[in-house]
Image (cartoon, rainbow, N blue to C red; front, side, top):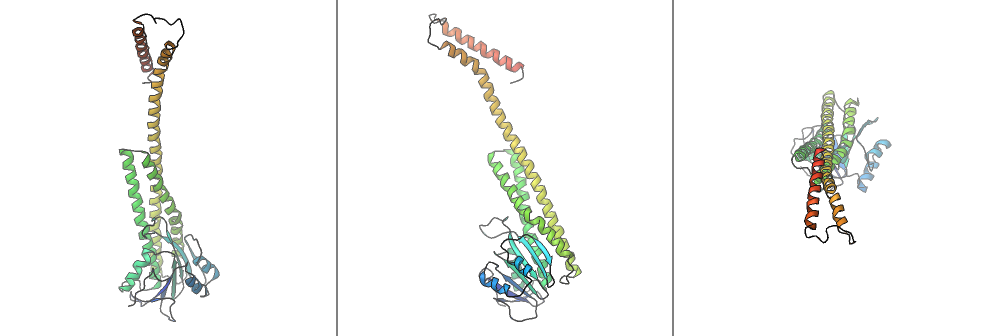
Amino acid sequence: MEKTDLNAQPLVHRVLDGAGGARFGAGAPGETDAPTWIHLDWMDASAREWVEARGFDPIALEALLAEDTRPRATAFEEGVLVNLRGVNFNRGQPPESLISLRIWFVADRLYTAARQDLRTVTTITRQLERGRGPESLAALVLALVEGLNDGAEAIVEDIEEAVDGLEADLLAEPDRTLRNRVAETRREIVVLRRYLAPQRDALVRLSGLRTGLFDEGERLELREQADRLTRLVEDLDMARERGAMIHEQLLGLLSDAMNARMYLLSIVAAVFLPLGFLTGLFGINVGGMPWTERPWGFALVAVIMVVLGGLQWWWLKRRSWL
């Protein structure tokens, strides 16, 4: 069986044999009635020209090749358009920078388009190479949805573990670096939820479409995957709430620490203010200063300052300011 490097070809096709395998080829497929999966890089000029020449519904074609998309599922007269998002597991890429996967499904053709390599697409391709892949195009769509949900579940679990670590660090030794980590985690949650929530709605709509492309069992499986994504969105909501609570508690702890320092400085200033006034008064170089000619003058001033400091301490303690 010929194998094709997805990363090196902007347009590849796989002709399914109905038994879990496929015949691979680079470029556009030839004339065949067998179910065929065509995967392309929607940013490649030659791939775009080939797709534009297929005579698709103009709205579906525009959504398939759009620069930016949001998850959706729409039924057309000739097929179904589905836009989904997958976690970016490519090296050097943040996982939350989700990759758009566009799907155009007609009776005997499945067109998928992505700008970057998706782990789900690669995994299904390898399964087909081993003869253990989906046996139909509808099953292939289900496999894509399930693979995308697997990736989303993995990143959501990582976020939950990160939030657990933030809570532990908050109880152990909170500091300003923790605030940056909390902000970064909350940002990841917001970015993920921005796409996973509408993707859940898209899967719910897809499972309810009566197009004849999916049988009843496949629609039930799509509903199950939608419910699974719903749980992931709920987990993200919980993580978001926990992140907000951690942020509020951290700000409270940092504020308390700052207030304690300011309180200590205020007490020190209150104690030394009259003492500073007294020493400043006795330090002026004018005539008439008492005890300047007495050998015990300095000792007397020192005693007065000690007594005054003690009285201040007693007064502050009596008012529960210490």
